[in-house]
Length: 319
Image (cartoon, rainbow, N blue to C red; front, side, top):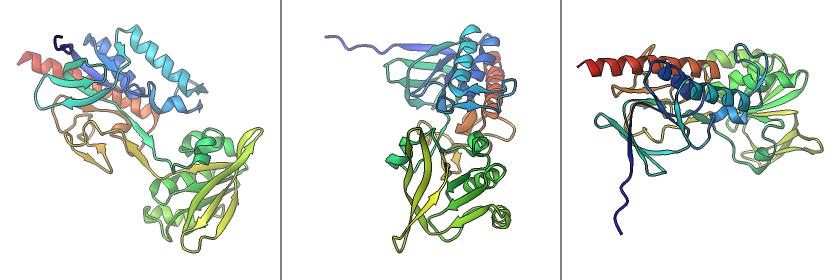
């Protein structure tokens, strides 16, 4: 039996990731005649495929997250992007052309690389949390806060994200309870001051979430059970919405030892640019953005990355 040779495919531009950043980069890359290949990864469409109503994408008063991603994929295909359902498990960025090794065995080589692998919200990992995801349990107040007008909600967390989400939710909710496992917050002082002054906010210190409680008919959250970390005493907090705000984890496993990262794994890019610490490698979307994390800002970065990749390729071809 002969050894099976793994196929190598070369492209000027390889895009890894299939959220707004990846698909937008593909549209711009295709229109620049770079004939990009886009590798979709484990979750084609990314985080938006687990979001229901999207009400902040310009030009769409309301669209379902999965539909928006189907539209973007269609757009990228229509302008000539080759879209591959595969997963990249290893990168070699030590020399150009760069190489990306995939689960299918194909090795993709490229002159320029755009990383758009995104991020995922961190969850508590409770079965009850999983059960009510999308039915009152959310990891995005800016996405879902609107649905809780006049209702009571709970936020868990103690960093900037948690405090910002709690403050944002006071615009809609009748009461916001912030639950934190410690006796002080890690967030910026100015945010804490704003939180403590807000009459709608109550804080439950030194408590961890035991369980999300709710009904089955219809499926929906009715409250949470929180346990005091020292005494073990249980407090029931009624709520219609439960927001998990314990941070996001960028999907940077591929590059964590190769590219410069910060803030817990986000890829560092140069100011006002998508350039990473390796020339010819660009990062866009939630993989690099720990600040905004919106579909529209990710798409904007995808555009920037494609334009920068095009210039990089043109300059190297002219050498």
